[in-house]
Image 1 (cartoon, helix red, strand yellow):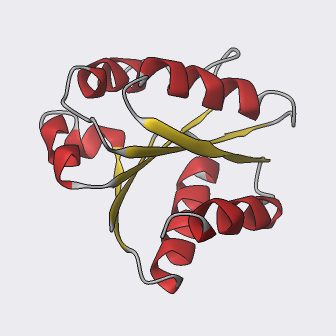
Image 2 (cartoon, helix red, strand yellow):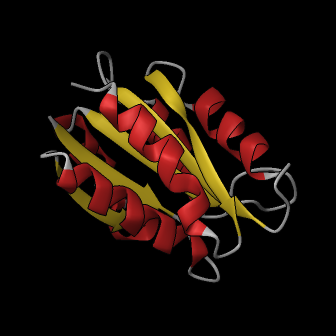
Length: 140
């Protein structure tokens, strides 16, 4: 299995959560790459070579980041991603907001098999570790 972690970040919290996901994936023997959304926005089809897409964003006004992240999600939705899996992740200043952001990411990528959502409030990344472990354990 091969995973790609794609994130948008403003303060660095979502990037840090993405790095934690990468660390856990690799500890379980899953090859992974991590990219900021703007690094691959011109070549979104790169994701077609991965089995698992981990897509993350900070919460902006009750949903994923605006430009360019939402445009990037539109590009992903146009790709052939059948038989691919999705793990959504988000960060916010309120524990009730990150799950809403994850659900909105999931809705924009309906062709993917959604495995679950993970998130945290601000820099409390360790609180997400048990859920990341649970989701990844069920992958193999």
